[in-house]
Length: 403
Image (cartoon, rainbow, N blue to C red; front, side, top):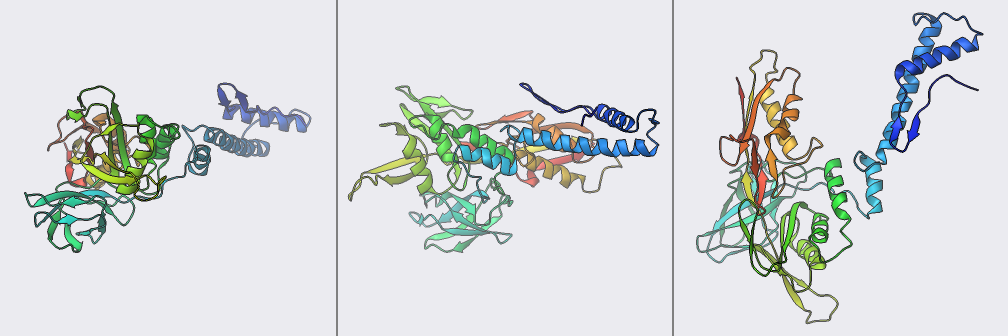
């Protein structure tokens, strides 16, 4: 049976859907042919109503087909479709991960704060240390803690204040800066970012292979990897970090030390030196005891708070909670929860990235300006992190002004 309704076009350039007006005209023509011609074409007639309903159904199904076609493209796929593409690369979506925060531990000089030591924030959340620290002659040491409860749980500056599981010689703990928010189940954007980098996962002896391996470690929120093939040290990034001669530099946020060390060691070049402030000993299991031991070193980045200054037009039509809505929108964009790129180690954070999220908070929002910086108040249009820095953001660091 023939029809005058135009079909979907599949071509090398992609899929093209027929216009709704063309579908409606086709259905009216079909009805007219079915009754032998001369049918009233007015949309207010019964046949006109039937044609409009049929056209709406066809358009909806065409849109569903287009969505399925787009799911085959890694740039647009999501959910189970994206999981299926990931399986081609032997990838699974990473489960939810807890917030990471740097705690300054105070106590007796020489006291060891072992991995697994626990502290509690003012909201009652428990954080477990993922790096080992030894209290220096200053009486303090910075230790990274990861929230036992997964998800984007805020840990503002000065809220990690209680030792939950005591260690002899450890007297107190606090966090100078806000934590790097954890994530719920890996987002579409983060999964695709990791998939693109995973193509190097089966390789060895390259920064890309180390990067892919470290990103796949359970609990890791971010990583940065470069190498220096030269015979002398080089200065890298906005902080001029000195990368040793003939070495690999790896920065990691989150994850267990043993897993990170194993990932780096499994991919690095023979005889390659390391950089960083964190070390863990890996043993070669190809031998019986005593097994060869290798001290793997990487950088645990310093938390750097970012300050935002947002000015929007004072409009009586704005909701009463517009300030908190804007703050939430900026935080979501900062962490990539809006589907865009999130702020990462060594990245440049542009103020322009946040215009759309703020604008979308309410139809009556008119943005005057958005600026940011690493000091308060933020006054620049961008801020660049060093390769040894991880950006953090707390709602208290987002100033929203109605002007």
